[in-house]
Length: 139
Image (cartoon, rainbow, N blue to C red; front, top):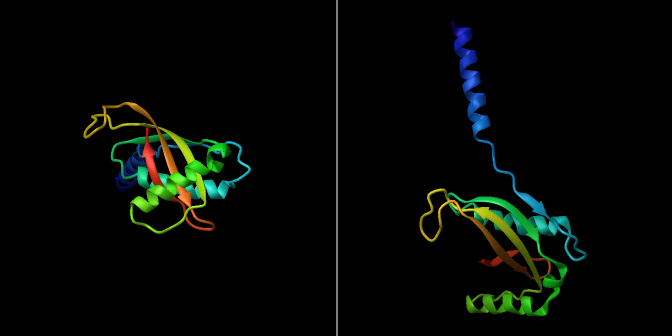
């Protein structure tokens, strides 16, 4: 009898773990001559950390946009303007942007439409040898 109970408990644990399979996020690093995979992974981790606070949303993909956008001095200037507007003093020298695809909560709520696929852009900046900082995100 004890053996049957142990087997049933083991099966219950296995089925519970299978039911908790974590959603895989598809990452497209594109072709960058500026940023290494490690640079991008550091930025992606900042995005995912913020995204995980968006209760009920399911992230499907993140894609690096382009070196052209990253090198655009207007984008770096924009990040510095945002930084200054928030009364912060860091001066950014690098910009990176990712596009995302994710699904809103099944029941919606707040500003979310129920169970809808969204496409957002995530803009991050950093100073030389600094850490990426999420500056703006959304449509």
